[in-house]
Amino acid sequence: MRKLALSDDILLSVDKPARYIGGELNSRDKNLDDVDIRFVMCFPDVYEIGMSHIGIQILYDMLNRREDTFCERLFSPWVDLDKILREKNIPLFSLESQEAVKDADFLGITLQYEMCYTNILQVLELSQIPIYANDRGEEFPIVIGGGPCAYNPEPLAPFFDIFYIGEGEVVYDKLLDLYKECKKNNLSKNEFLLKAAQIDGMYIPKFYDVTYKPDGTIDKFTPKYDKVPSVIHRVVVQNMDTVSYLSKPVVPFIKVTQDRVVLEIMRGCIRGCRFCQAGNVYRPQREHSLEYLINYAKTMLDITGAEEISLSSLSSSDYSQLGKLLEFLLEYTKERGINISLPSLRIDAFSLDVMSKVQDVKKSSLTFAPEAGTQRLRDVINKGITEEDILNGSMEAFKGGWNKVKLYFMLGLPTETDEDVKGIPKLCEKIAKNYYSIPKDQRVGKISITASSSFFVPKPFTPFQWAKMETRDEYLRRAHLVKDTMRQQLNQKSMKYQYHDAEVTLLEGLMARGDRKIADVIVSAYKNSAMYDSWSDRFSMEYWNKAYEETGIDPDFYTLREREIDEVFPWDFIDCGITKSFLIREWNTAHKDKITPNCRQQCMGCGARKYNGGVCLESAN
Image 1 (cartoon, rainbow, N blue to C red):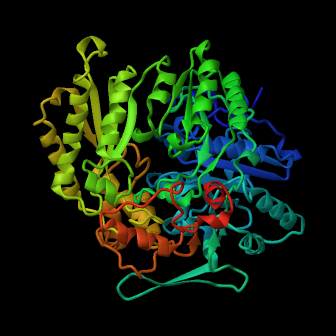
Image 2 (image 1 turned 180 degrees about the horizontal axis):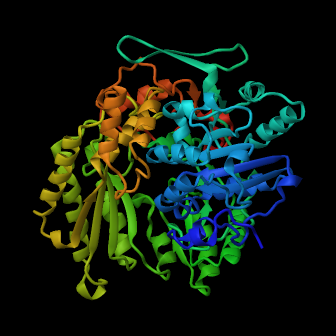
Image 3 (image 1 turned 45 degrees about the horizontal axis):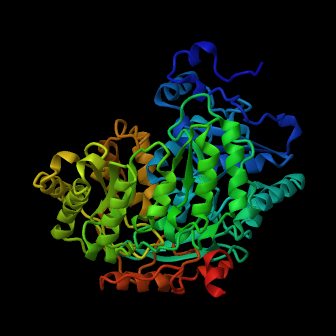
């Protein structure tokens, strides 16, 4: 019998005790006395969300392949257990060994979205690990962060020992080998960090000084020691098939948010949407081979018994072997009653051929992302699709038997006008008219169109990183304009509109664009009870407004101000592969309402060719 960290009476008193017991199918079990490194991998949100993330599963599987390493999982405890752990002074523990996190060698925290930042402090505090890296002695684990938000690590810099910039499969082995060597030679944590700083992709915040100009913008970002690099280079997997696929995914005890097999078909994107951080920082596009994916899919479906498989990528339509992959999946899943999910499809590539292949599969809503309501604004953001593409693509979908469509838009994009905003419901109306132009006996009931809009956040390493955000009131005015205009449409009863929280958006913008000063705001908000900020029923702007008062930080400085071209960004010391000159060129092109060809049409010299992989090699041949 496994010894659990929590007693039966505690487990029976909290919601979903299976979140905290571990022992699931394919979870790893190693003796701590038999390994050199104990690595606790944390997703700073609840179990159901963290276990839906393929990145955690990939790293968990990869690190546990090392005989000298035991990688365990950790998720943020929900508020009921949080309270009990504090009251009873029980240190936070990992799922596998049920031992205290503070006794591990590494605490790795994935940074998937900005609204989890207060949960990072929760995990540290409940683990009885000092929040600030400078307060941690030799007895505490090395805290390392990675993931999309690590591309601007500065708001979190005081809390982390290391940030891993790039893809996890590349240098973790080198880092852990170095740690073992340093441990064997009785080197201090600081000596290890100095050596780690010389590994590509490793950013150690304590080894850098930041100075500011009188106007509050950054003056210089400089390393403290000669051996510490002035630029951190992102690390990239060049050949995707060299990555070992998940042979034994952990199968959760309870239903998770994305209860399906996720098949990562490629990384990166050829499209170059100017608002999209992932499309820029994950360049170049690199594909898995068809053979790799077929073997991967068989393994995952057979082991998990999942009822759905989802193809994961930034733009699935651009996978060169999509037709053949679907051919296999349809044959393999048909008798098993498994649904195939095809997210991230572009309307212009959603051809009749693909539709005919999936028409026998259970039909859920089709999801498209026009992003903007007018062609002018779609050109500004370099979406690369026309209204004709949207209408023709949706018509093909309707003919294939779909009658539910979800459309994703953004409000507050650079150069947006009220006409662009009104274009959202007008586009929905055109799609509805298209559907009702099909003879009644050939339609599948009434059409249902759900339009959703998020509010624009200018992210690091995008051509729009110089753009400003709008105020809360302006964001809401535009959302209400969409809603009012939708009510004027002939087919308004077939349309539904929803929009994101404007206050959360502005807070996300603060975290995405902030410098080290923002760390004080995060700590203050956390002490004011901010936690689970991505959960609408837990979020309170009151905690953050109080934090602004306590720290003297003006959030408008980070969100409502358009940047000068020569301003030093908090993330400028990171080389993500895309050159700043390319981003400036794209920023200027956007203001001319012009599009840029995608990577397969023409190489635009973004800088990613230096990685010597993927689509960059295709265009070189």
